[in-house]
Length: 136
Image (cartoon, rainbow, N blue to C red; front, top):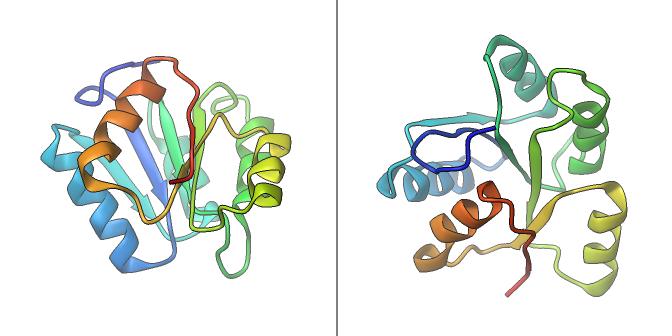
């Protein structure tokens, strides 16, 4: 698993085009070179299967059709992807939301809206092995 933002393969799973473009821009401005955006879990898993490795998934929790909870189950059951880091990226930041994200097996939590000055460093820290639960 790659631990630097510049070398990591990252898949953003987000149904809102403005959100995934903002996430993509923030990561690329900080040196990320392999960031892919998918609007559903199905397309994210299909893309991940075509890549040699996925270091990090940034997953929105509430999307039409399937939720981030559905997606993490698929990732954790997949032999090629089970060891990838999976981060919940969501505006649902109430105590019960955070508890449910932890129970579902996400590695970290970043609340939306993301803080542009902090976001790339949060991703770097997660890639480096830190566990973050930052909702503000």
